[in-house]
Length: 90
Image (cartoon, rainbow, N blue to C red; front, top):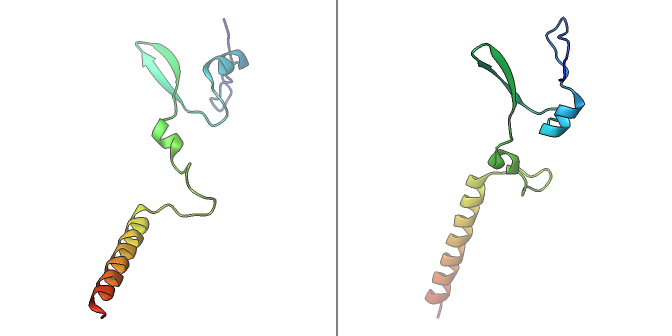
């Protein structure tokens, strides 16, 4: 059975064997759950949507669906106007 001593600041070191077994890495989130007097540490899995956020973004590029949508509509309007001008010109 693994044991750890609580520091003066309330810190507890999770033994390496358990960190590796449960995939707990620096920056990982854990939840503390009180089950009728028993304290349980539960590793929190990263949300798949949150993990994928920004994966398709180019470095330095701002992700703005609104800007992309408005640009697409502007281009569509320009194409339509060019088509109308071609039909009106003899």
